[in-house]
Length: 110
Image 1 (cartoon, rainbow, N blue to C red):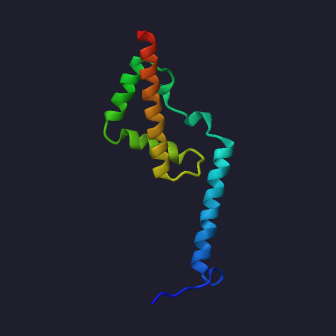
Image 2 (cartoon, one colour; image 1 turned 30 degrees about the vertical axis):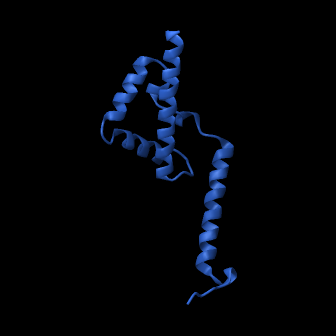
Image 3 (cartoon, rainbow, N blue to C red; image 1 turned 135 degrees about the horizontal axis):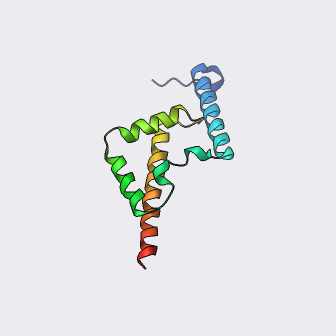
């Protein structure tokens, strides 16, 4: 038997909806304000060359170092992102850096 309750009588649903609205509002505000410049990479990703690419890939091979850096950045950065979303953002940034280095090396080769 399925019990149907009206939304205005279901306090748990109201609280959940309010929390989600606040979360989406904070995320929208962060997107509107932009990402701070100091979180747009580390010192290895400032220049797109073979040396930085090799050092960056070596950094990524060290177990738990990448996750530790992401957690430390997430803790000390004002962000509405959850930790898992922050780690995904770091991964996207790393993949973009690797692709940009490959593009730069192709330019030099031609």
